[in-house]
Image (tube, rainbow, N blue to C red; front, side):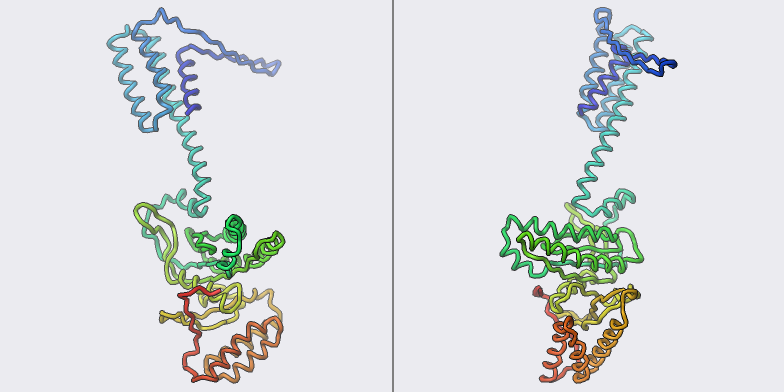
Length: 416
């Protein structure tokens, strides 16, 4: 506002000849001298109408900075009509004076529009900067480039991620409330930086969880592989952060990540008062449940079968066919092992044994399945993992075996 006022007053002074600027360029010396001269107007020689016009121009310069663009243009148009009326009725016709006032009005209009455009650009940049702190940058860019205003959205093949801190409830009870926000923000910083770097979109923070998705707002054919790379990078990054926190006397952080690839509806959802760009659908619900499965199997990352189909160059270990309580749909869940290029012969051998054990398990061949699971559990690093399968088989053999060998999980309560 102050910038516009100064510019308008300067233009008025220049156009009326109150201030004159002259420049002399010395070619030999290579210098440019700029001189400014102030010439006070001869007020006594002006008529009452001319004085009113000058006063009107000065008042216009004071009023315009306080007005919006639409109102400013309306005031300029009204002032031009009033100026023409005053010149026609009360001021003797003087080509020089009329020309000066017309030029002054045109210059003030042009400067007003120019400065208003500059201010609007700066305001937009500042608002864009703050908006990116509250909305995903990808969505902000999508709005600015496409100007999309379709509230219905569309169904797409996407990958959804839920990243949650394990045992957060107990940690929040022990941690000082003043330290909890900073502790959480450091976790969010690590996770979100990796998600964005791998072309993901942060949807929302749900308590201690981060929900993100790949495949929107811009469509992607690599959303599953991008999400998997991000998740695999988040795990060691959070482990490094956890070591730093422990050294500072803060609680450690362990994460559980669920990745679900499937069809979901993405777009604007909400009320008339507030809308949000988000994703809903079965793939979202599945990702949330997969994240909770990490607590059951004591793993950091669990994915669904659709992801294994989308990332064929990665090796996966099947965990179970999960029957979500209250739903008829069965979900096959997997643990990502490594990329094919990182695998060694022993990796393929153990995965083959695991697949064979799972086949025996699904066919009800309990003894053969238990034998293979026990053999796989001889590895000290895998003993705790395979003990779950062995214990489950022992319980099945001691009870009446059911044709349904899927593992039933009640997700109405949070696990892990």
